[in-house]
Length: 189
Image (cartoon, rainbow, N blue to C red; front, side, top):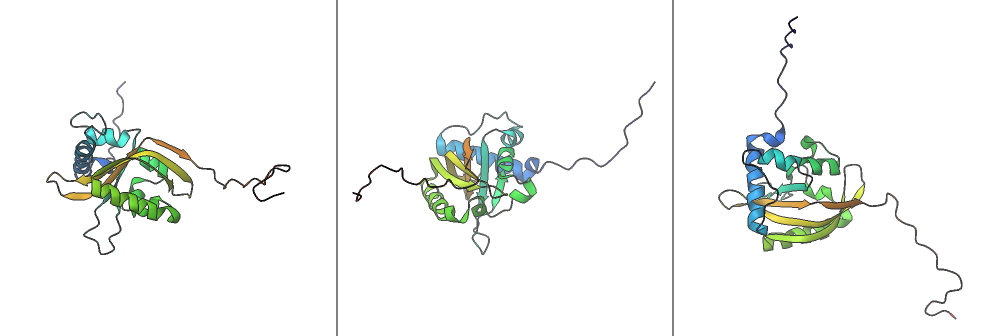
């Protein structure tokens, strides 16, 4: 008995990380990392680098250079699946977000100093800092690499970061324990 033909429906939307612009951006990410650190970001097969970077277990983010906007507030231009999962945001919400919002207000000045240092050096590794997801949950990123994102002509286009080590912080701050009784402290007794 022949099978009925499936109904023709709309084709699924193209995955945004496979758009022509995102494929070009993937090339910039991979090439800039190679130049900055002398090693590949991921082992990607030719032709599938955009999909492999998006699916990598390594968290990868990038923001623009923001020179074209009057607010000079860098916005995320790339986030792979691991980044989207960690920050608990879909691509459409994460890409375009001011990158400063990936950190809570008390961490933003330190983050900005680090980005300035990474920009001046071209690449920096070993960064540890606190970030915040879309629901306000704090986490530590450890051993992050930051590098200047350059296009195929060598023009600066922003900055990128990658890390594979992170952990959640407690939801509630830990209570300060009272001093133990019977133990002398400086200035007592």
